[in-house]
Length: 179
Image (cartoon, helix red, strand yellow):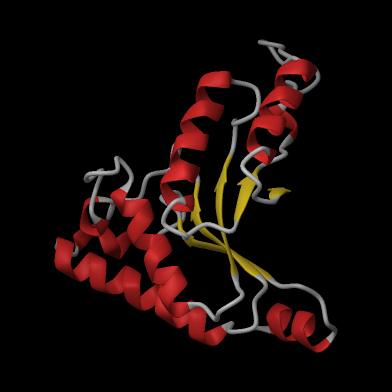
């Protein structure tokens, strides 16, 4: 709340991170049945949307490839789109966040692998054609590009591949946010 209020009072954009993320979820969610999980996640998104009504943007789903939540099936599982659980989260975010809040998808290890970029673009398109996504998040951790000094398994990804895949993402016409 303090950070949100500071940002709003000083005319800074406020970005919330995040609504749905399998790596950061209350342990008690796993003990609920599917209907209860669904209701609690929807309530969470509604609460965040109401509490931080003037946020500029929010990562609706973080790391859908690498950190799938325990309540995935409660939100629709793969379903017809292959990503119904993500679509549901974005539908709720669109419903409960103030009009004008940019809804983002966010993932890591996207740029160095053409196959992952293609898969990410397919997910983005699933959301885009439904009018649910306003921006693309990619994570710019050091390990996204190069191993740490002294690594027992050193690597450095091709700058040409990184650039080409970034261009593929920007070709969607959606803004790309590197965090």
